[in-house]
Structure formats: structure tokens, C-alpha cells
Length: 367
Ligand code: NAD
Ligand code: IPM
Ligand code: MN
Image 1 (cartoon, rainbow, N blue to C red):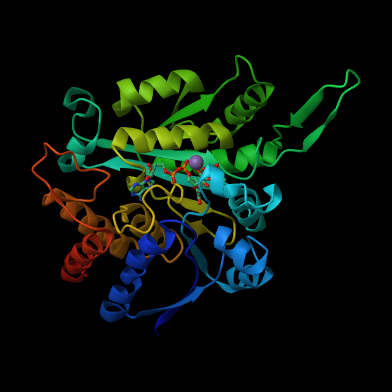
Image 2: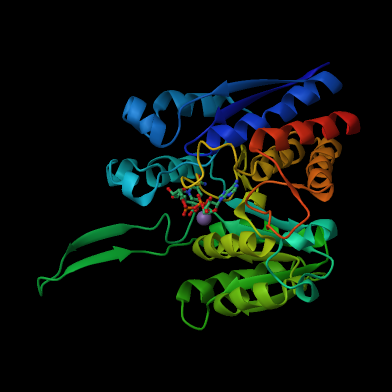
């Protein structure tokens, strides 16, 4: 019997439609070569949804997402100046992304930071640091911390304006993401870097206490504790020491973009946002307003998010592997999108859609 999957397609803003247009071609290729069918249902989400419908995450889009087996989301958001045209609470980060994460409790954000040996030249780090490439899995807590804590603005008794933004976690929120991280460590190199700031933050002291409890069930895993500031340096000086890293929401936001930096571009950063019942998949980066509409964005992050969906939501591990292989073989054959190409390189620069053509040709060969 044919496996039939329903996917909510949220194209997003900026480069979103350009890169998602390449990513959905993977579904077409699979339908031709495998006994599987995909129903893609597009729905407005983000700044364009606000301008069209007055809501960044309209009710009809929520209904489409509720019905779907998985959600594929392009980046959303506008430039800082353009954002001011939207009331703060409807700006797509607060008005769409955070409500999407909360709706499906997507507590575990997988952000792989990977560069094959033959793509190592894309990294801005020196070859003696990069060595055989980079292979790190960052697991970022995604539905707690400062992002979701109580917020309050007011005027205090001295007439000073103030703001409170509270970093909140329950022990269960911490435990559930740590279990995911320990499981990943077990399936990889049995090594887990716990990134924290327990020298200052009570939330990190608490996080580490819960980690010690969870660790009792994973005694085969070596835990290495590293302060978040120190981790930022270590990612630049010796990324090879890391395998699986786990951290709270805000630390993970910042360090994962640094991960994109050591790869050479955020365009190499796909991600999976995993919940107990439903997961959604999106690049780690934003809508890149500086290059939107030019057909030069790197679609790897978006196509890679589809690969993660295939494996994690639909159990299509082999096919996901072929998608990665196809993309990497295009880069390894000497093609590149503009974000990664350096003028001194012997590299042929290709547009977003041409990169998609090359990936699809290779994928069809592999499937
Ligand atoms: P950004 O990630 O959009 O861009 C940072 C830099 O990376 C830019 O120079 C951009 O051109 C480049 N870049 C990003 N993705 C690329 C790709 N696929 N190919 C080539 N180059 C790429 O960050 P920003 O400019 O700080 O944010 C722009 C908007 O995106 C903001 O509104 C922000 O809130 C939003 N945002 C959304 C998400 C999301 O939807 N998950 C994530 C991050 C930022
Ligand atoms: C990310 C983004 C989001 C975050 C924003 C846009 C809400 O930066 O997915 O990394 O901070 O989580
Ligand atoms: Mn971010």
C-alpha cells in the first residue's frame, strides 16, 4: 500500500519561497521512484500573512498544520526597518514562530553542523583546524527559557522605566531535552558536551542538577561540562572536540549561528524542531532580506530540512541519505552558491534554481 503523507508548506518571507521551491522537488522525485505520495498544502505564515490577513499565524494556517503529518517551514521575518511596519506582537518571530513551537511543543531542536572533508575549504577556519571536516550535532531546548518566560514592562517607584523578562524552566522541560541529547550521544560517539553558565545563572545550576539525575540512566556516556562563553571560543579553535552538544534555548540560538559561521554560511544550516507528536522542519537561518528575490540563496539548508523530515518523521533514512549525498556531491564536484564561493576558488558559481537542478539530477540517479 502506498504511504501517503500530508505536509503543511509554510514558504515564509524573503528567500523562503525561493529555497522552498527547490526543496519540494525532493518530494516529486520520491513519488516517481518510491511507493509514496505527498500532499503539500501551502498556507500563509509570517510577515506576508500579516500583510494579507492581519495575522502572522492565521487560524486557517493553524488548521492546515494541525491536519498535517509534518510541517515544512521557510524562514520568516523582515529587515529591522521593515519590521517596524508590523505591531510588535504580530512580528513574525513573536507572532508566528514562537506560537508554532508552543502549539506542537517542539522542545528538541536538532541543528547539525556538518562539513564533509571535500567541502572543508568552505570554512573560514584554517585547514589545520578544520582537518577532516566538521560533524557536530547541537541539540537546543526550544520551548522554554527567556523566550517563553513572563515579560513585563512598567515604571518603578523612582519613575524609571523597567523591563522584566524571566528565564523559566520546569524540571520536566529540562529532562525531556536532555534525554533526547543523551540518546543522540549514545547513537554517535558516546560523548555529550553540556553547555551552561552555572557560574552565574541559577537556571544553569538547576539544569546541571537535572542532568546529573538523567546521566544515571546513561552511564556509558561521557559528559563534558563547558561554560557557554568558553564553548564559543572552542567552536572556533577546536571544533573537532565536539560531537553532541546540548544547551538551553537562548544559548542554542546564538551558538548554532556560530556553527553556521564555522561552516562558512548559514545556508548550510538545516534543522528539525521535534515535538512529542508532530515535528516541523526549517533552516536555522532567517529570511536573508539582503539577498531575497535574486535567485542566489543557498537552498542546502531547506533541502537538508526535507532530508531531516524524511528520516525523522517518515522513517525514510535511506532516501534522506541520498538527499544529503546528492547535495554534497554537487558541492564536491566544484559548484557553489554565492554565499560559499570565494573569488580565488576554482569554483563554478550557480544560482539557487540551478543548484536545485544539479541536486535533483544526482538524486534521481541515486534513488
Ligand atoms: P539571516 O539568517 O536572515 O541572514 C544572515 C546572513 O546570512 C545574511 O547575510 C544572509 O544573506 C545570509 N544567509 C542566510 N541564509 C542564507 C542562505 N540560505 N543562502 C545564502 N545566504 C544566507 O539573519 P538576519 O538578517 O539577522 O535576519 C533576517 C530576518 O530573519 C529577521 O527578521 C529575523 O528575525 C528572521 N529570522 C527568522 C528565522 C526563522 O524563520 N526561523 C531565523 C532567524 C532569523
Ligand atoms: C532561530 C531564529 C528564531 C529563534 C527567531 C527568529 C524567533 O533566530 O530559529 O534560530 O531565535 O529561535
Ligand atoms: Mn537564530
